[in-house]
Structures are given as C-alpha cells and as structure tokens.
Amino acid sequence: MKDKLLHSPSRRSAKSKGYSGAALVASAISGALIFAILSNAVFARVSISADTFRQLDLFGEVFEQVHENYVADPEDSDLIEGAIDGMLDTLDPHSSYMSADDFQTMQEQTRGSFAGLGIQVAMDNEGPDKGLIRIIAPIDDSPAARAGMQTDDLIVEIDGEAVLGMSIDEAVSKMKGKKGTRIDIKVVRLRDEDPFDLTLIRDIVKVASVSSRAEGDFGYIRISAFTEQTEDGLNKAIKELSKEIPGGPKGLILDLRSNPGGLLDQSVAVSDAFLEGGEIVSTRGRRARDTLREMGTPGDKLNGKPMIVLINGGSASASEIVAGALQDRNRALLLGTKSFGKGSVQTVIPLQNGLQGALRLTTAKYYTPSGRSIQALGIVPDVRMPVIYPGQDEVVERPGERDLPNAFSAEGETAVEAEVVADASEEVDAENDGLPPVEPIKCGRKENGDLDDCQLNRALEILADTTVYSRALADAGAAQP
Image (cartoon, rainbow, N blue to C red):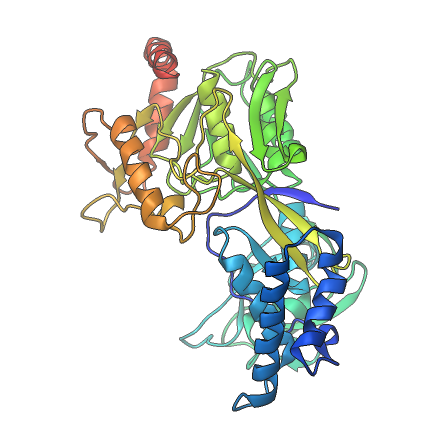
C-alpha cells in the first residue's frame, strides 16, 4: 500500500543504525557479485542504460574495497543504508529512507493512534529528576488517565527495570506494546515519598489533532497536524461548537499556525468542509498516475458564515493546501505571516511489506485552484500581521522551504541548488511583498503570565465587525489571480 503524504518541513530525522540489510550482501566478496544481486533484486523490472550498469558495478567495487580494506571491520548493513541515504540525499529535502522502526513511528503519527499507555513524557537532563521519565500530561481516555497518572509524576521503573540509565527512546519503546498486554511501573509523585506501584493494561490511544473552543459568539478550531483522525475531529468540533454557542457560531477561526502538514486526503476533506464543491487542489507529477484534480462536494458546514484562517512560517504542506484553497475560492480571510512553502507530495512505498522499512519519495507537486504553485514561495496572507513577543527585539524569521538544500524551484521540474531557488523566490517575493511595509505588532502577556495571542485577538476583532470583514474579503478576492 502506498500513502500520499504532505510531510513536515523539517529535514530528515537522524537515521537509526539498526537496519538489517546484511542478507543483501552477506555473500558478496566481489564488486561483480554485488552488482548482480542489486540488478537482479531491484533493476530487472526497469529499463537501465549500459552506462548506469557500469556505475552500479563501480558501486560494487567500492563496497568490496571498503568491506575488505577499511581500518575497522564495517557493518555491511550500515554501508548499505548509508549508500541508500546518500542516493536519496541527491534528490530533494523530503525524499528519504525510513528504517522499519522509523516507518512504524511514521504510521503511528499519521494514524493518530498507537497501542500504549497514553502519556506525553520528557526526560530531564539536569536537576534532581535527571534521567527519569517525567509526565507532561496524560492523554484523555487513555490507560494512564484512567489509572490517575498526573502531570509531573515520575516513572522510575518499568517492568522491574530501573529507568535511570535508559534513553528516552528506550523507555518509550518499553512502554509501548500490543493492546491488552500488562505493564508494571513504579511512580514517584511527591518527591519526598517512596514510589508507588501501578499496573496498567495497554490500549489503543488516539491523539487528537483537532481542538476547539468558543470565543464569545465565534468558534475557534485548532488543527495541529493532518492525521487520519482530522476529518472526524473537525466534524465533531463543529457539532460541539453549534451546541455550545446559542444559535451556533457567527463565524469561525481556523488556526493552522505551526501545523507541519500530514495526509493529503485529510487536507482535502478539511477544505471541502467549508467549500461548495469545485476544485480544491491539483497535483502534477512525472507520470500520469501522479497527476490529478481533487474536487469538493456540495455543502458548506458553516453555511457561508465568516471565516478567518491563521497561518505563519510553520504552516506547511497540507496546511498550505487548505489555506490556498480557501484563499483562492475567496471563502476565508487569511491572517498572519507567509507560510513555509512546501508544495510537494510524498508517496510512502513500503519495502518488503515494511519489514525493511519504507521509501518516502517525492512524486508530485501540488497547485491551488487558481493554478498557483506554493513550492518555495509560500502563501502570503490577506492580512499580514508579524508579531514580536516579550524578549524579542525584532520579528523572528523562520527558515522556509527555499532554504533547504536541493529544494525544488517554484516551477522547475528537477531539484536545483538552494541559491537558485532563493533567487527565484526573491523575485516573486518582491512582487508579492512589494506592498507598504507592515509594522510588527508587539504582543505582551496576560495577567496570568501567558503570552497574549495578538493574531487571534485581531481575527476576533475583524469577525466582530461584519463591514470590516466583508470589505477585507472583497479586497482579498480582487487581489487574487
């Protein structure tokens, strides 16, 4: 099965070194044999030039020399994984190899569910709790929540093994497990008292990607990532707001700030919830199967009520699909700062049914309904509102897609050098941002010490004045191509 992903803007995560690929080269004692194994296992199904075969033979010879003559005895699996990483590293920033463990983690993230205890944890690196697992928060309706675990509890022992000395990844791995299996842990709550024992039964834990609340007469919905739970979470949030606010919300704020992306189909579903049919996004790839138009269905769940979408430099990929669709269709007003600019689609291809991990490969670019490419350019909001928070002297500029090595250009069909992308992007930026400079807003703190959300406050002010909203939306629509 291949999944379409619009993944996080971050560079590839560090690769684990436990990949077991030794069987592929276990009997390889010459470059010719390496070449034969690779060509039989992988390349028999495609057309490859004679020159490419010579290059593969060169790879086999290099492998043989390293295997036989390197100063230390290398792990063959590490050499193979390094070669795979190096090959994919010549492509774009979002194509990568995932080990079996990385692939499983990615599946859990996109499913929004996993089997375990249901706790958000951290490991302190200093202080009296150094080296212990500290509970950030239990997830609602999870084994941990049902057992009464609390924020700031410490886990000091897992199934009889002391946590001190484990890495956080090792501890988390031990706490995960199949649904219905038992785990015994020791917990410290009051630091001056002895730990107490807890026995929990692992269960399926769902991590909500959607949260909502009433803001006076208006609804506020935050989407933190696009997982398999997002569409259902959005529908539930809209229903709850309709019950919570008498007569239903008069308008909605959709917060996509710092949302790194996720599943393509979920971004389409979220966009479709607020549109009356029509095109949402199109993808264009090298092959016909990767070129398509995603169309919406009739029915706006808000019935055309005013809507503002919050974006910033951390809004990427699937977030940009939603923001771009609602902006192009003049359905919502966008407020905040320019988005990240990741306009590519990754297909996840399991290797040997996932037993040997998976390949995450960029297969297409996406375009907004008006045909705009967001790649390396991002989306400029209708209401630009940079902010400065306490302790900052100026607006903190986040790196964008165009700052990543080997990023695609806005229109180019192949990976290009980062400075070429930057030059092309600066030309378009001069066109899009060649508006009167916007003075940053200085945001303070509330009475309780929390940071004030100036962008949210401004969105609420605009929604509260129907004349201001209507004029701003009309101006935004006139500015769209």
